[in-house]
Length: 147
Image 1 (cartoon, rainbow, N blue to C red):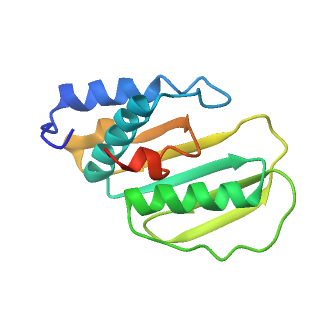
Image 2 (cartoon, rainbow, N blue to C red):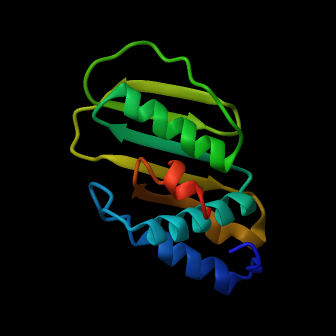
């Protein structure tokens, strides 16, 4: 999507691609090609947005930390989170503008990564919104190769 112009029609098309996940409780299993296409769509919206907020629900703190670091690395900048130890499922929220995080226990059924894009640019208003859940490993080493 690097050559995609940020027109209302193109933003709407990408928004529809990302919104197909919105009614899911857990992200679907995706092929490597699907991961690359999804990653490219998220990166394009990230270029149009001023910042993102991530919401990660996982079975373990280690999985949440790894997913957060991978997503933030691709969407904003490399980070290394120092989080307190915690057992069981967690909810981890990260704001790429402030570099701030919030961590708590999580008992719900949802799993995956929600990405909220934030922009004040009127021409890109359709970018604003929350999308997902996306796979925790969307930006793992294998998905990185073509993204």
